[in-house]
Amino acid sequence: MEPFIADTGIGRIIGLIIVGLIVGALARLFHPGRDAMGLGLTFLIGVAAVILAGILIGGVLGFILAIVIGVGLVARAGTGARP
Image 1 (cartoon, rainbow, N blue to C red):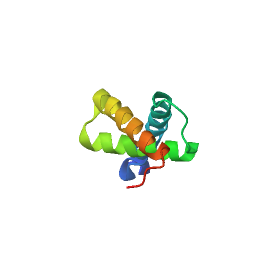
Image 2: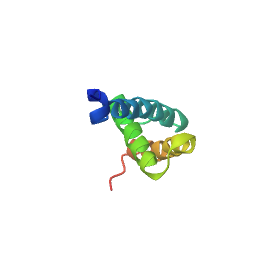
Image 3: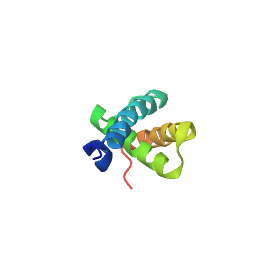
Image 4: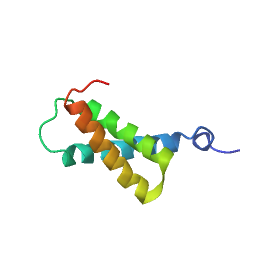
C-alpha cells in the first residue's frame, strides 16, 4: 500500500509552499523601496508566483521565472494598484 503522502501530493504542496516563501522573500528583497504590505501578503505572492511558474515551466528556469513574477506582483501590490 502506498503512503498517504504519495496519494494526496501533500509533499509536493508543502514543497511549493516552502519554495513560495523563499521566492516571496527574494522578490521583496529585489524590489527597491518600501512596500505597504505585510509578510503574509509577501508569502502569498511568492506561493502564487511559484504556482504560475510551475504551470509555465519547471526546474531552475522555473525558479528564476518565479522570482521575476514575484517581483512584478510585489511591485503591483506594493503600490496599491487595483486591477
